[in-house]
Image (cartoon, rainbow, N blue to C red; front, side):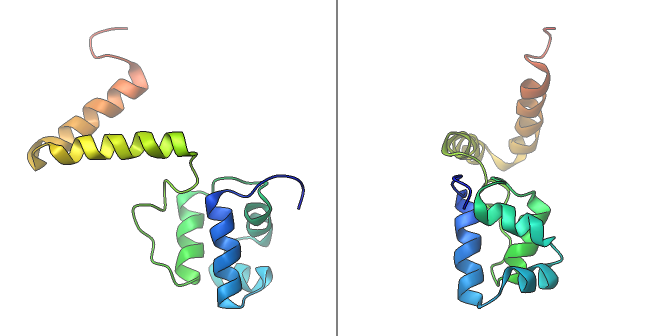
Length: 116
């Protein structure tokens, strides 16, 4: 290893590949993910895979892709923020959620509506 610590996803990848009895090359061939990407994830050189790469690796290693796939590579502060926003949204009546998601996204991208 190069002194870097693999992310949660990188550690999962090493363990899951080991349980599957696959080499990095075999996983690369089966998943369609470049071997260098797999090596970098496992070594900690890449901390967060794209959602597409994570989904391919999980599908190949027998774990269905789910809502956590997109957030696994984030640090614990970002995951905590995402959990908080998700909890807030789930408390809203279903018919209001989509509108609130748009409002929050707009706010995060541009700042408060009507300012700027």
